[in-house]
Length: 248
Image (cartoon, rainbow, N blue to C red; front, top):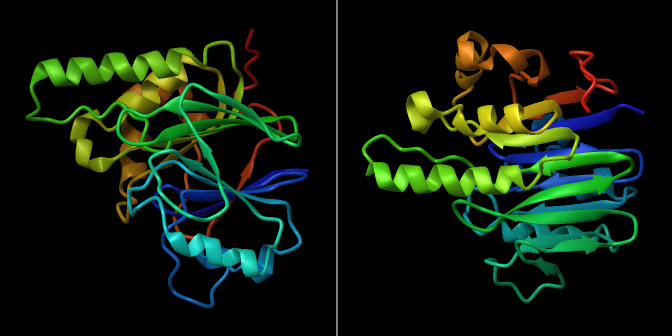
């Protein structure tokens, strides 16, 4: 089956695979009463799925405690939270540098260059990467030493994935970084084989896709980037690499 991706807003996505329904960094739960086609999780709509919820860190644009209310409708739902999140809920708290095996899926936890963690998940024959706020945050006006240290830390984490073949990668392309918005995605795409890269962390600023379309730096991998236009849009991940590239 085709893997279905739903854009839930900002860094929030749902991913429907053969045997799982994965939810990442969901926080915007309005307007109430809507469903996936509007980018809102209605637990009634997914109650028959094997639901696993990942939260990369505690920032309010990535984490909404209302996710735990879904348990009333989905009793077997599982929650996987980075260790900077404090909660009394029944969750699996995970730590950077560790690998976890839940039986039906496995995942590695990478360290973030901001807060919390990133996830590299193996499920249903897929390798899925969700960066959270792991990004090359190069800010204009910051001391060069800080930007250099940021670049080193980011590359260390991405380099740790060398040898992987990622099917779907959710990666920040934050417009606030101005001309540096592509640095993190660019390094990932040139370092690790990625079939489909899904931009995120741009809020309402969908003009970032126009930037990617005309940015010459993206030319080598532009046909492996998912372009989408609205919250709730469904994206079908290709079963084969769209560039027909054979990675070794």
